[in-house]
Image (tube, rainbow over all chains, first blue to last red; front, side):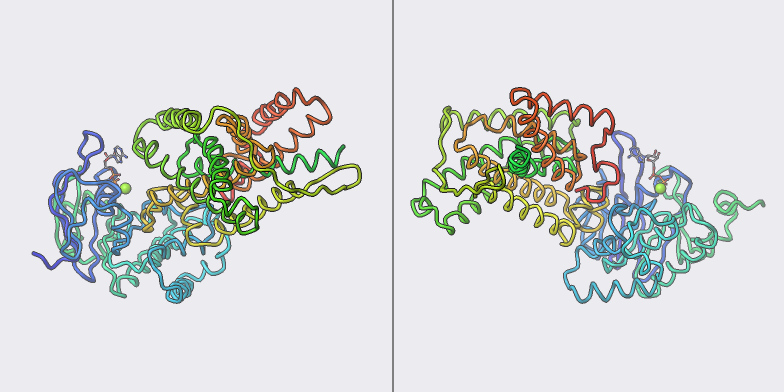
Length: 240
Length: 296
Ligand SMILES: Nc1ncnc2c1ncn2[C@@H]1O[C@H](COP(=O)(O)OP(=O)(O)O)[C@@H](O)[C@H]1O
Ligand SMILES: [Mg+2]
């Protein structure tokens, strides 16, 4: 214990009186991609939002670089380098592509570095350069996902929490999105990846947790879970 | 007659537009009508009077004295609006949406009564301003009207620049779109809300000061009608939309003076509100309410 980048210890999160997380524990090490798989309504987004501080856990603790962050306001957690790329992109639709990226860098103060990062994003996602003056809300789903990733990266994250990045995307774009997530990770950013597309996420993750009705029911190396019969049946849609 | 009404309408419209910005910006970030805003307008005028008279150096109406007076109005009106938010609205952030509305009405009554009790329940004259009158065809315009118009336009251009170009202006627009998503960017939405109240309050207070200068006197209940009209202007332009509030303010000023000039000065308010009702029937979102590009 004690050497994790992000550590979640036995958290309970409620909506009014209903528990959406019931004693979840998990951890993330430097440089890892860890996948969280689970059915619709299992509590994945709740978990991500609890880490981000948008919702506060009623019990349990969350530690980042060995400091307790649970209970801190969301904007402070974001400034520490735990950056969420939310489910459904959640861009600022009435702001331009460039403004969305600039807002991603809100916690950064070095103008020169921000501009360099914008150029990096343009290199990674050339479409964003073409569309920089366009309102984010007018872009296609795939373009919006690229912008959501770029906006997140502009914050220079230490941990990225990515919630359902492939949702609503055409298969080619799903492929591309996972490819980019792998590239981002290769630059040293640890990633907690939430997906309903269990197969794809297990393929790029090193480890995974399986969540069911607010509880972690299983955790293992990703390639082992890919071979696991229960997982195959419940989450990979394979007939045995 | 036409030019005269145009001049009067633009002067009045400048004041309405400045007040309307406060309503619309607060609505933009909190989806709440700040009914106490008209009292910030009123108190802005009192702060201006105080600054002009209480400190002898200013009373001489030098340019410096004038600038300092407006800075004092700006600062204190802004801070007053921020304090109102912190004390009366912020604790109700999680409450049903009607609660802060009731709280705002309460604040409005309290502020009026404070001025009535501790300052005066009579109208108070503002020091006389030396103005020059100019003849344009058959109409007259004085320096005060020119000043009110130019100063308001300058403030609005500055606000536009702030909102569209600066980091905090962008963060303000982000907060208006979503508090939670903007927090994920590291933006402290409470600070952004405070900033909106500060800017709206400052503009409202300055409008109060300008209004006092224009009519020559101020009173504890002076905020009521301009407040309602500026709120109308904000709705007319599309509530939540900054450019809409500016447009709505000028439109309302013009509608008011033209109906006073051409139809009936007694019924100008009736006519003004009929226009609003028609507007709401045919385009409920207001003039710029749909293709909102600058919602704050
Ligand atoms: N804002 C909310 N208010 C009340 N219940 C919620 C809210 N958000 C999610 N829930 C409930 O919490 C549970 C977990 O939801 P969620 O975390 O969104 O699941 P997932 O992301 O895995 O699909 C579900 O039963 C859902 O109905
Ligand atoms: Mg979800």
